Amino acid sequence: MEQKRIIRAEHLTFRYLDEPDSQLVLNDVSLDIAPGEFVAVLGHNGSGKSTLAKHMNAVLLPNGGTVWVHGMDTRNEEFLYDIRQNVGMVFQNPDNQIVATIVEEDVAFALENVGVEPAEIRRRVDEALQAVGMYEYREHAPHQLSGGQKQRVAIAGIIAMRPDCIVLDEPTAMLDPKGRREVLKTIRKLNREHNITVVLITHYMDEAAQADRVVVMENGEVILDGDPGEVFGHVEELKAVGLDVPQATELAFELKQAGWDLPDRILTEDECIEAIAKALGL
Image (cartoon, rainbow, N blue to C red; front, side, top):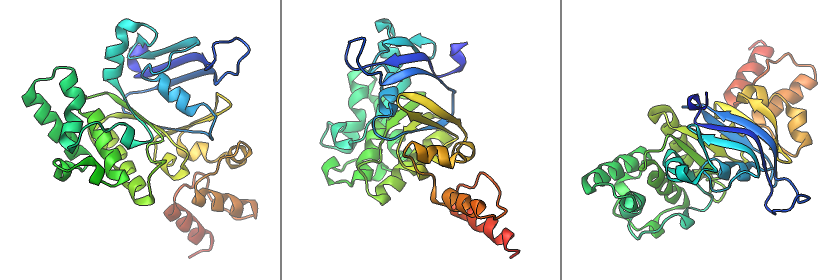
C-alpha cells in the first residue's frame, strides 16, 4: 500500500530532548504525499512544520510512529542512501548549500561523490541548470549571484540527483520579492513539467495558494488539510492560530460578512475582481 505514496507518516511523534516529559514537537501526525503532488505546509514558527520536513528524508527520525519513503522505513539505516536519493532537501539559506566556486561544479558535486560517470554528470548538470533557468550562469561564481539565483542553483544540485520528490524548507524566507518569484516559478515548473513531487514549507500565503494541497500545522499537529480554496475558506480558524489568508480571500470574506453575495474559494486578485464586478452587475 505504501508504494502508491512517495511519503507516508503514520502516528508520527517527535521531541528534541530524549526525555518523556519534554515537549512534543510533532504529536501523532499522519500524512500521505502522493506522486506528482505539490503540497504546501503552513504554520507559524514552532508549529512543527520544519521538523516534519526533516523527517521526510531521514534528517530526523521518529520517537514514535513511522515514516516511509517509497515503502522504506526511515529508521532502517540500510535504506538511508535510497531514501535520500528519492527525496532531496533544500533549506532556507542557499549559501549553506553551495560548496564550489563555479556554478556548474557545485551542481556536479553530489553526482561526483556517488560515482556517476563524467558524461552522465555533464548531461545531468546541463539539464538541471536549464530546468531552473540558470544554464547561462553555469561558469559564474556563486558569490556573484543574487539570493534567488543562488537558491535556484541549490535546487539544480538537488534535481541533478533525479529525486522523485523535493522538500523545500522555507526556501524563499531570506529572499527579496523578485527572488521569491523566481524560486516559486522554478518550483512550479519542476512540479508541472517534470512531474517532481514538491513539498514546500512556507509561511507565505500567496505561495501556499499556488499549491495543489495545503496542510496547516499548529502545536505539532495537522489542523487543516485540503486544496487551497478549502483550507483558506477557514479564515477565522486560521486567524485564531496566528496565520493570515491571501489578501483577495480576506477581502472576499469581509465583504461576505457585510452581506455581499460572493462565491466561496476566492484566492486571487483576478477572481476577487470578477466576483465583485458580478455582484455589482458590471
